[in-house]
Amino acid sequence: MNRIFRPLVFILATIYFVVDAVFLTVAKPIADWLADRRIFDGSRDWIVSLRPYPTLALFAVPLIVLEPIKPVAAYLGAAGHVMTGVTIFVIGEILKLVLVERLFTVSRNKLMSIKAFAWAYGQYRQVRDWLESTQVWQAVRHWSRIALYTVRIYLLQWKSFQRSARISLQSR
Image (cartoon, one colour):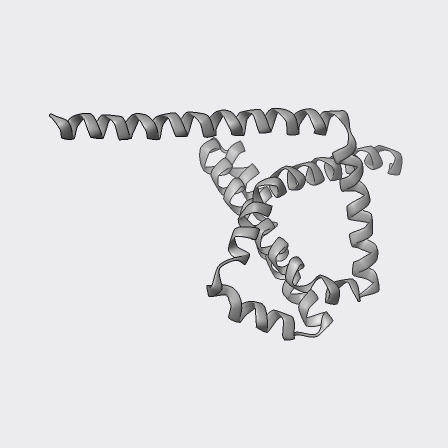
C-alpha cells in the first residue's frame, strides 16, 4: 500500500511547490513594494522585537489561515463556480505569499536560529533550486517574461492612444 501512495504524494508535493514557486514570482515584487511603505514601519518594529518562537508562531499564521483556500477554491471549481474558485485561489495565494515573504524577510535571522526551521528551509530551498534549474521552468520563465512585456507594450500603446484621443477632442 505504501508503494502506491508514495508516487501520489510526490506528485502532489511537486504540484504544491510549483504553484507556490509560480505565484512567488508575482508575490515577491508586491512584498518588496510594501516594504517601502512607511505605514508598516510600526508593525515591522514590533515583529523585530519578538523572540524566535513567537516569530515562528506569527510566521505560521498566514500559512494556517490562508492555506485552506486551495481546497476551497478547488471545491468551488468542481461545483461549477470556476471563475469564483480561480479568483479566490489567486487572491488567497498571492496574499499568503506576500505575507509570508514579508515576515520571512523581516525575521529571517530569528527564524533560522531555530534548528528545525533552518533544516526545513534548507530542504525547501533544495527543491526550489532543483525546480528552477529544470528546462521546463526556464521555458515557463521565458514565456512569462514575453507575455509580461507584451502586456506592458499593449498598455503603453493604449495609454498613448487615450492621450492622443483626449488631445484631439480638446483641440476641436
